[in-house]
Structure formats: C-alpha cells, structure tokens
Image (spheres, rainbow, N blue to C red):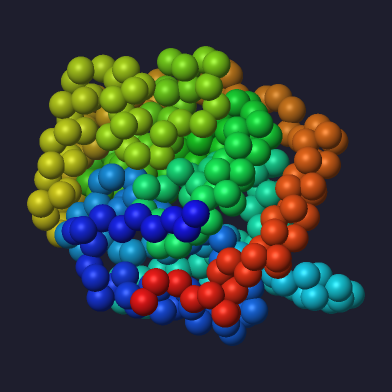
Length: 285
C-alpha cells in the first residue's frame, strides 16, 4: 500500500514542487524512495504562517550500485532555497545512526505528513526501530540535543527568540515522557500529544499553550526573557536525564547489528523486485 498524507492547510504549489523534486531525485540519482516525509515544525505540530518546508527522505540504491569498490555518498542534500529545505539519508546511514541512538530516523518514521512511501517499509522499519533502539541511547540523544539547544539559543535567558523555546522544550518533554512511561522507548513526535502525555506542571502547560497560540497566528514572535516556568522545566528534566541516561551501553548488540543487515538486504531485494519509488514509478502528479 502506498502512503500519502498531506494536510489540507499545506500550500498546494509547494507540495507539487516537493513532489517534482522527489521524482527528479529518484531519476537522476537512480535510487528508490520508500519514504519521504515532512519534518520540522509542520510535522511536530507547532508551525507558524511562514514555517519552512523540511522534506526528509530515505533512499535505497539499486542492487547494481552496490557492486562497486567505490563507496557512494550516503546523503543527498540540496542547499535551502526560499522556504524549502530537502535532504535524505541512504538506508544504511539511517540504520547505523539508529543503532547509535540517534532518534531522528524514528521521528521520520512517525511523521504524520507523508509525501510518498510504502507502508510495508515504514511499518517494518518502525518495528525494527522499536526493537533495536534502547531507552539509554534514545535518552542520551534527547539530553544532548536539548542541552545544545539551550546553550546555543538561550544564553543568559534575558533575550530569547521565543520560537526557539520549542526546540529545547521538545527534547525536554520527550525525556519527561520517557520518565513517566518507564517501559516505553519512543516518544510521540507530535508536540501537543507529547506534552499531553508527559504530565507537565499546570503552569508550564498554560505557558506552552500561549506560546503555541501566538506562534500559530503570527510570523514573528520576537525576543523576550525566557519564562521562569520554562527555564525550571528544562533545567529539572535535563538534570534528571543526566542521572538516568548519561552513562550506559553505547554499542548495539551484535545480534541487533546482524538483524539490521538482514533488514537492509530484504528492503533492497523487495524494492528491486517491485520497483517502488524507482524512476519508472514517479510519485503523485
């Protein structure tokens, strides 16, 4: 079954441009595109009227492209143009990063905005990710991401670009979600769902709701002091996460690595047999 899920409020001309770009990628690079999604604020659920389009995709090279002594580049990327940013990872790169605890590919698999894809690929990859990803590795990913966002964008907290608050809040909320759900590993990608399920303090919920309301309505939130309730939440969650996730196993077990190899080979074989996402099977018109 082919996947396609585009919210009606998205710009139809921009979506058509992305569809055409994906067709060109498949044709010019001679790759399969079993999944192409929207990442960033539009998929996370806190976009503003002028939010960029962040197209991300997983690609797979043809079998013939594997039979060469010359390693191929594992990223296809384009310089951002206007409000469109598009790039993708080779499936091998996506698997290697997943086994290191990088949660980005998991978020791609969970994105509610899908430009094109094959259900068997998305569902199979997500099932493998749930099995292969560990709480420790995913927790470290969100901890380091959140601390970096706080360090880069917030400074002393006296003048903070208000839209940047979400980029630290999201990993902090994911860490809290993992703490509230001790048997789960993969937090929701959709930010409003994530906030609802992480049992946040009431004062934080009110502050975040107000920020989201203003971000939805305006193109520029401006700069202001970091709200104290947000600062307390970030610092508390990152401190707790350092205790829980800062140490632990960094390498995936050999059996999981072997399973990743089998998954990769099975995907290449099926795409080659069925031709999904090939130059002969372009995406939506």
